[in-house]
Image (cartoon, rainbow, N blue to C red; front, side, top):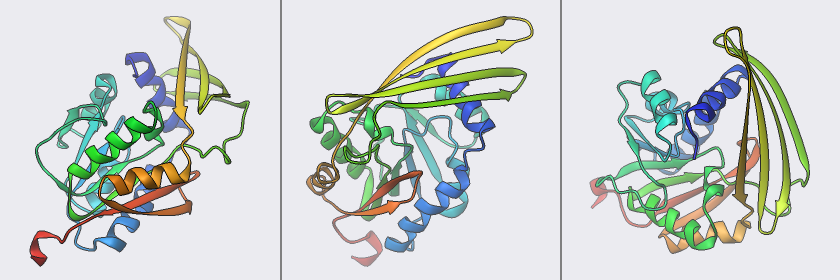
Length: 244
C-alpha cells in the first residue's frame, strides 16, 4: 500500500511524464458506451490519485472512486473535492449501491494475491454493477508478454522537487517483482532515498476470463490499448432496470 511519500512520488512521476489520463479514459468510456450506450455513472476502483475521475465524469456521468491508500485519496480529494471518494479494498469493499460502469485501471488488479483473490475482486466489482452494466479491468502483463529483468528510469522536476526513479523487475514464480528506488532532492531538505517493492500477479488471459464469468460477467478482451496491456470488458448478466 502506498504511504505518503510514495503517493507524492507517484503523482510527481506520472504528472511530470505526461501520463495521458484523458486519452485512457476515452478508450475505456468508448468500450463502456459501446456496450451500454445509456451508461450514466462510474465507480473507479483503485482510483489512486484520481487521474481518470474528471474525464469519466465528462464522458459518462457522476463518478466515485475507491482506493486502499489514504495518502492517495488525500491527493485525489485535493484535486477533485466534489467527487465522492472511499477508502476500501477492491477484494471486499461494499458501498451499498450500484453503478452503470465499474473500472479498475493501471493494472491495479495485479496486486491481488492469487486466483482466489482475483475471483473475489471480480465478484466485488460485479456486485457494484447494474444488470446490463459494464466492468472494465486493465490487466498486468500475461506470462507470455511479460519481459523479465526489465529496467526503467526517469528524472522529473515537479512542484519544486526533483525525483529520480529507477526500477528493476524480475520474475517471481507466478508474479513479477519490481524493486523501485527513488531519490528526492529539494533545496531545503537535500537528498532522500526511498525504496519500494511491488509484486504483481502474471495471470493468464484464461484466468481473467474465468474470473469474469464466475462473477456473472461475459468478458471480451480488447488488445493493444492501455500501454499495450489491453483491456478486459465484461457485461453483467441481466437487463437494465428501464428495460424490465
